[in-house]
Image (cartoon, rainbow, N blue to C red; front, side, top):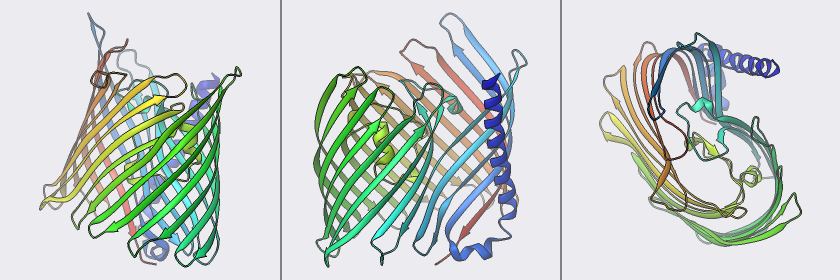
Length: 452
């Protein structure tokens, strides 16, 4: 009964948030002019939808099917607001859906919310800067995927930090900073907390290049383990005529203390290599990154989230040494009326506590085509896969195909039809699943832009 009341309260709060977003989306266009002086970019939408979900589960000798009609609301908001030395960057989205199981007639509610925000205060005339951050993510605590993204657990993370800058020369900057954060989870997720103290020295080498040296110590506390990580890295970054180039090399050392009193040490060479190409119509990037971290450490590391590339799910992990390669390409004018986005990533994670090795893969492609002035078609495909020690044997994977057609009814109002497909294939001790969702969506949006 208490769990049901908690879920009802959570759904009520989310419903209030989404309904508020709907009202804001309908009314904000009236106030757009008065807000534009402080807004760099801000956009969002609120939607109502009805859908039908059909799920097929392969149980070996038999196949179970289930069809659920549903009704719900969703909303999203994202952008950057700036005023003076203050800046707020955010991106959030949420959905509340009521569904009825056709097999037994039971009705239930599901909700999901995902996004991030970061507030920074930076005045070039002052030595002090500070920041606040919030992230809400869909997380998974073990190997495996689910066909319904709302079935993942939700984790909230809060962080705060400050820095103090000195200028030992006309071309040099020295910054001392600290940051602390805490995550809050439910069900099988444990709360995590961490703090990081760091020093960063940077020097401009030319009009387009800089060199930097940074050192940090992070302390993390989880349910059964305490970890201290010391890191140092030397980096070089250069702005090129068509993009940027960066390279870094360093090392990390970790001390791990388990609840039972046992302790261990780990060391790793770390570094990164990144190259981006940018033109008027397209951009591409190749990134390699090797680091030592755990999920709790990421809370307090002074890295702003990449708002344009928030992952659908985040895996909760212990202390690992990870090697990852990420390739992205976005083209706004593949043809006169279409745009294309492609990404691919592979990562090798080696646990320093259990010794387990996991390979993670993800790839996707998204194509948008402007059929007419008022109609648009979008097609996307995404794949995620996990492997253990043998990188070529995928033990768990999921394919997602999304197709949507939208028609503009008014300046800020659209009607759309979406067809989403998910295919789960696993070598683990669980069943394969297929899921198909047909959804009709009525949306009201807004978009603001301004100059400071």
